[in-house]
Amino acid sequence: MELKGKKVLVIGAGISGFAAAKIAKKFGAEVTLSDAKAENELKYNFDELRGLNIELKFGKQEDKLLEGVDLIIVSPAVPLRIPLLQAAISRNIKVISEVELAYDLAKSPICAVTGTNGKTTTVTLLGLLLETAYPKVGVGGNIGIPLSEVALEIGEGGCIAAEISSYQMEATNHFRPHVSAILNITPDHIKRHGLMEVYQQMKERIFAEESDGDFLVLNYDDERTRGIKERAHCKVYYFSRRCELTEGACLIGEDLVIKVNGKEHKLCTVNELGIKGGHNVENALAASMVAFLAGAEASKMRRVLMDFTGVEHRIEFVREIDGVKYYNDSKATNTDSAIKALETFDEHIILIAGGDDKGTDLTDFMELVKARVDELILVGDAAARFKQAALDIGFNNDKIHEANYSMDKAIEIAKSIAQTPQVVLLSPACASFDMYNGFEERGRDFKKIVNALN
Image (cartoon, rainbow, N blue to C red; front, side, top):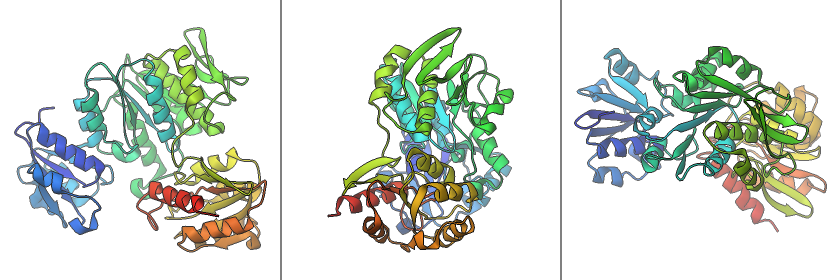
C-alpha cells in the first residue's frame, strides 16, 4: 500500500488507532486522528502524536473531516454504521481496518485465529509453537498488541500469530492469512452486529480471501463451524476433542495427535498438557494444527505444549487460603466462556458473576450454575437479571448474595462462607465496563484483593 503523500484519517483513538496513525505518518502520509469523545474523556496521552505532527480532532465528527481524505483507517471499536463512515463510503473513500493495514505491510505469513472463546489462549500458545519453526515470530491483534506494529517489527523471514475479533473483520476486505482458524461461534456481540447471522458472517471473513495454498482449521465439535467448510476455497482441516478424525487434530484415547496425508504425529497426552480443562484441549489441538500447517514439526511442539500453563485472567490460579483455592477467570466476558470455566471444576464452586450485561440468554449458564455452584455472588449492572434467572431455574435464594458494585464486598462474602473442598471462581459471564476499564483491570483487582487477604 502506498501511503506517501496521501491524506489519511484514522477513526478511533484506541491502541489500534494510535498504531495506525503513527505508521501512516512514518510512511509519509498526512494524518488526522479523530475520536468522538473529548480528549479529557480518553485515557491516553497524546503528546507523542502531537510531537509527530499528527492532527488531532476530538468531539463531534462532522462530514468536513472527510475533505480531501484518500484513506480512512478505522479502529475495531468503531462500527461502520456511524454517520461519518457511511458518508465516507457514499463518497467512495476507501475504508479499511488496522488489521487490513497490517496485512498490506506484512512480509511474513500470517496465521490468524478467531472465535467467540479461546482466542487469546490459542494465539499465545500458537506464537510459542511457531517459534519452534521460525527465527522471528510476532503475536498481535485483538490480544492487545496492534497487528500493524507486529507486521513491521517482524519484516521478512518470520511468521505472525494474529488474534482476530469480529469487530476487526467489519472493515476488512482483502485480508488473507496463510492459515486461519475458527475455534467456535456462540452468541456474543449481538449489540454490535444486530443478528447472530451477521456476527457469524464477520467471523467468516477471516478466510474469505484464502485460496489454493492456504489453509482453514475448523472445530468439528461446534455445529456452527463444522458446516463452514462448504464455503471455503482452500484446504480445510478439522480439530476435535470428541471424535477421532481421519485427518486433522484430535484425541486418540488420551493422546493429542495430528493426522495428515496418512501419517499420525503424536503431540502429548491430556495429562501432560500444561493447560487444563476440556476447552483447553480444544485450544491446544487448534493451535497445534495451525502451527503444523505453517511448518512446525510435531516432535518440536511437544515440549511447548507441556510447558505452557495458560494466560492471565483465564482460569488463573491466584492463591489458596485455608484450603480454598481462588481462581481469576475475568476473561469470561460471555456465558459460553463462563460455562467452560464451570466445567473445568468439580462441584462446590463459589461463583462471582455479573458485570456489564450483554443481554444474552442465560438458560444454559444457569442450568450449570444450579448443578455445580454452591453459592452465587453477584455484582454490577447484571446482578438483578442474573438473580432472577437463577431463581427461575430453581437455584436456592438463600445461596444468592449481592455485592452491588464492589469486588471487595464480593470477595469478603466468598471468604466468609468458603470451606474445603470449595473453590472461589471469578467467572463473570459479562463485560466489565460498568465497574472497570476492561476485563484485565477487573482481574487484577480481584487478584490484588485476594492476595491481600489474611
